[in-house]
Each structure stands twice: as C-alpha cells, then as structure tokens.
Length: 264
Image (cartoon, rainbow, N blue to C red; front, side, top):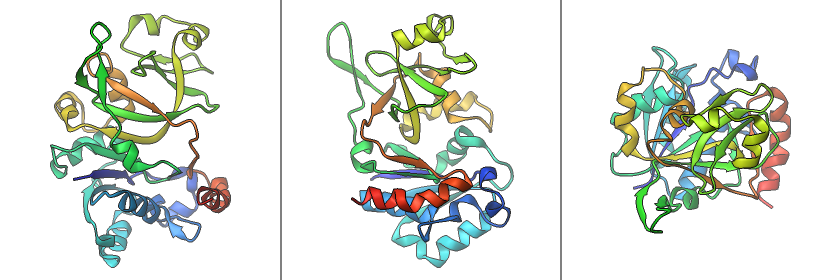
C-alpha cells in the first residue's frame, strides 16, 4: 500500500489577502485548488491512502473533500484546529492514522514539480557499509533535493547522507557533528555536498519511536538534523528538477506558465 501525507495546515501568511478568507490549500492555481493538484499527482502515481493535516479554515478543506467524495481515495484528516503543530508535530499527531508497515511520502501542499512520485517513493533506501560494501541498514528518510541558488542548504557527505544545515548568509549551522559545527562556510562548501530541499520527502514509520521524546510542536527538519548521527537520512538528487513553491502572491501569476512547461 502506498501512503502519503499532505501538509496543508499552514496559515499561508505570504498569500494574504487570499488566505484571509480561505486556507492556502484551496487557493486556485491554473484554475484548480493547490490541494486538488497534489491529490491528483499522488493518485496518478498510485497512492491510495492519504493523510491531510488541517488548521487554518479547516472546515473548508473538510467540506471540499466531502463534496468531491475524497476523489475516490481513502483520505483521512489529522485535525490541528486546537493548535498548529508545525511539520514534525503534524507527523507525530498523525501517527495513529498511518499504516506502520509502509513508507510515507510527505508533500507540501504548495509545491508544484515534475517529480515522478512513484519512482521517488520506491527509491533504494539501503545504506552501504563503507568497510564491507554490504548494506546493513536502511535510511529512515529520503529527502528530495536539487542544486539551486538559495541562502539555506542541507549538507550531505560523499554517501549523500545528511550531516547538517547551513545559512550561508548568516553563517548559522545546525548539525550533531562537532566537525561540521566548527567549520566555516568556505570549509563546508569544500567538504560537503550542499543542496536545497524541495518540500518532498519519504519517511519511514521506524522513526516514530524517536518522536516520543519530542514536544507536540516541532519542525520536521529539526528532527532530521538532530537525529542524522543516529539514523541515516539520505539525499536524493534530481538534477532536472522543475519546482515551484506557490507560497507568495507573485508566484501565482507565474504558476500557469510553469504548469504548462511541466506538460511539455
């Protein structure tokens, strides 16, 4: 069974004034709500079980799904109307809704891309042992990344395992590894592979126990960064990635052209 979670609980503050009266998930792009576009991308890839977390104007999303009979899928709502839990807290709250035996694809509701979601979901998660060349473990998560100009990068070693995060403008570094935290930005550029995160990742239920010590509200990326020395977090590079984050008003005007380009 292929299962996924759509992060749709955000306030959408960068899309004001549109989100003063509706959730970001129902903002229309190219004539269709963002949520519908992500749902159909998942459906076309073979996903039949989808969890959607809701908070801002949650009732509108719930009503929209009911009006469309959940688009013929098994869709469950993780209700965060009592308080926005951020991305990590959103996954933690939704744990009872997931099948504990299957990988979970996580997709931000405001991301448009050319990613083959089925291929990404089924990517090889084995981690090779450096000493013997045999895979003894599997990655707990796989992050879809690409090279693009940004201020904030995830850092990976030569095996494409996550080792940290850096803001190259401020010099802020997040990592459980002392040698990474003590490096300069120039040293990080030289010693590690730096990529931008896409907002799409694959998450193993084997990580659920690690969340038990976390508060109800926390970012999923902080969870990855704080645990990447204990569990393998792999980066998956898509060099020809076409991706748009429809998070600002000025991106909506360009989204229809972007979508047309994806179909070429």
